[in-house]
Image (cartoon, rainbow, N blue to C red):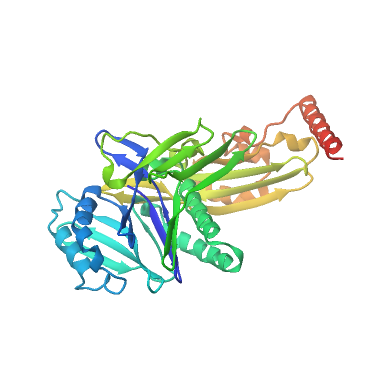
Length: 422
């Protein structure tokens, strides 16, 4: 279970991948697997699916790699396809499972590359197809995120236009990764365990004949009156070739990634979650066939007495994953209303709280009327309290003296800053 994505434009391809390992016996998940294999430094493959099947395939291929080129790798009767078909066809389906991979082959002489998708069907054979220019592919269990490919394709295409104007390749790839992480996050924290994917994704890219796996440091935070946290973490590669995830804010705790074939049920480790993604609000907890679930976001700018509210409807999809029906929230919520208010009042503004995500549900019988009247009642406290049981988290009148103290504290802080920089 994993997520691997690639996006190709012209002679460029980016790869976005995770490191989560799911072990059945004993049942556990941990960030401990580096799912990339390099063959003679010309062919690179990001693997998903049955590790044992891939190990068997790679072992058989290793002495044939020198005969595989950009020009023959896709040939129907070529050595690559022939060897794969032989190994996979001889692998019984009751011992191995369907698996996919995204890969590339480099041509050092002509400074070019070719991307391909591999599909292994035990007992039958394999399918090798080129990933053409302008294409986006997502493989692994992450592909079960509803509509993930068309949603990402639309976003990546727009980002590529910006890249051509003024972005470097790393920032383009990083922005694409943020879009994937955002879509997954919008499905709620349960999605990480259900699909067996990491909360943090890594980057690699190829341009011409040059391929690189990115080592990087990421830093940021999320802050509201209700909750907040900072994060600072790195993806590193040691001189020995070891890949490591490092959480700088958790006593520099490190998580070593094993080459995918070196992982076993005894592999040690734990979930790498430096951004506390597992602790976010979960829309799956509110799911009920007889109810409609909504997401609300409220932003308060006290200095400018500005208030903004947005409410969206959460859709759910039923997915069949290995014979089991699973409910997954759709990452693309349906916008119902988005409004703001200016000049709320120097004291009144402190009755509102910053909330970056909150869910609530109402019966389907009420939802049609609720959505119809919402635009005209988005700041009507009495009306909203009928539908939102946790409305006090959004709006809770404070005493005059409490607000007065807050205003004085803010003004004193502004005065100190003025004196300091004068």
